[in-house]
Image (cartoon, rainbow, N blue to C red; front, side, top):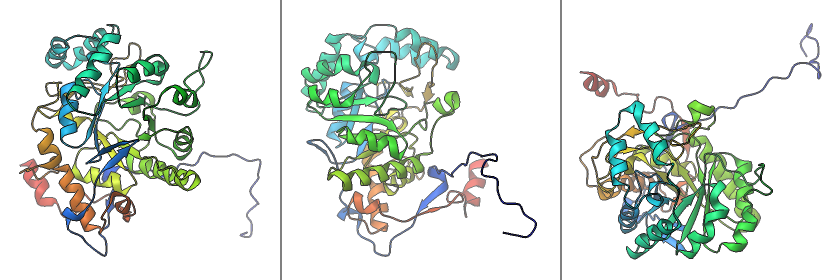
Length: 390
């Protein structure tokens, strides 16, 4: 102790400590000491008994995924999730409503969505949409919120769905409510015998507890999506790189504890191939995207999309976003492309980054070194900026 300084009073003031968290634009992946050809890299994702050639999922947004999109995404090797509580289970043909949303002003859009979602969810449409996806030869993944899971999970399973995604802004294994008993995953799994994916989480403890209930995969991310405003409305969220690292630690801990490997899927805020690669280097087993898929010709949203919480009657936590229609599922995932901004051929970007890091598999790529690099997008790019501003 320095002379003249009094010892700290253990009963004195205590200040909350903040740790640094990182998003995509603040980090970089370090190349490996060995490199491999991109065509030698192995991609793929397993959710329960289902294998997908590429670890890419399309978000359960009404303007992104309809049965036709789900079929095309399956043919491309990935998985699309249909929103059970959206317009596809409220209207026989939502086309007119989607057109109205697309043609509305930014101020009017949310009110139109709130009105549209007043229509009741129909059991016959749930069964019909699942059948349409299955008839197209695709894996049928259906998203439902925790509040309605107990009500609809048996119908989803009986209608032939392959995967249930229980999804809300924040999900935990323990939830207090005014009901006699809220959603309990251990009880759900006694009656549901298809894989259940749960999200969203951002931390080690919550992810570990959810994995211990027996889920098939966990979605990671709170508030980074382009159409989500949870961070603005609630102030809640963790930047995606840190969230993925923390949840990957829970996955690895649970694997050592149980011998069961539960994939984590980074969900939201992913714009480019660089973002995709940083997700996997941070520990993700797969990624889920909304905005990039919303811009495809196969998406039903006419160049717009909105988050699942946007139509909330009392506290909307999302907004309608315009992305245009400027690509296809095939070009987005596999190219070929002439774009230089990393917004197409995302699978090619992932394979190339893996090769530069000497990773043959996703699990090997998860071990790639990363550094904090706030200048990663600006260093040496003065001519690009000058050209963009001219």
